Length: 229
Ligand code: FPP
Image 1 (cartoon, rainbow, N blue to C red):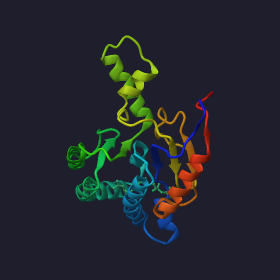
Image 2 (spheres, rainbow, N blue to C red):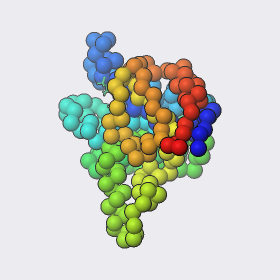
Image 3 (cartoon, protein in one colour):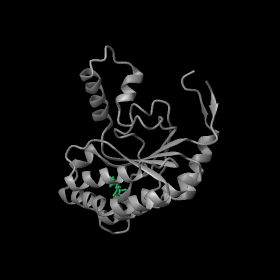
Image 4 (cartoon, rainbow, N blue to C red):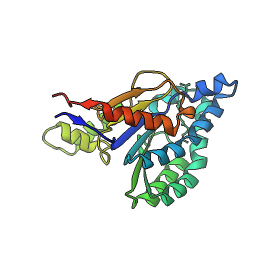
């Protein structure tokens, strides 16, 4: 199979570079996270305008727990303080929100806000936003395998493993973007990215713009996807 795609259906973004964006400006890393957070909505709106149907954003990885206590607390507090209002606004824009990742170790307050957000937006079908928060791909794959074993299904195969992943509501990402200059996946969608097109940009996440997204989508449309054949 060889496909020339006009538009990606599912885009996933590793939003990297908040800390360096701030440090370069002589600011505290937390300022970078605020700017990074503020950049999410414009990119969601831009993605929707570009005809993308599914967007997954990597907001907090299971490895991010190794950061300083202050930084972790800052990110968790930021998330807790914005979920309600953002969910209302995204709901007005007919966006369906889901949490991707583990519930373990997340404060109760955040978990109940996530639950409310998913409940509020579950009827929306215009656009699907998945927020990977406390997410680690290996952790998700192991969980999926354990669920299959517990279900006493006779055999593990690719479809079953996919079906038991919490990303199962989304198709596999057509394209994964990483901002911030590093060229790696960092435990993000390892199973789902088997045939994703990868784009690595030097721009730090707070500076990633609608134009950047548009350029990547145009580049993507020129790539020929062979899916191994
Ligand atoms: C990567 O930049 C970013 C993160 C680890 C956190 C991402 C958080 C946000 C975009 C804001 C909070 C999100 C929500 C949903 C409230 P980095 O800190 O790794 O940057 P660096 O590589 O330059 O250090």
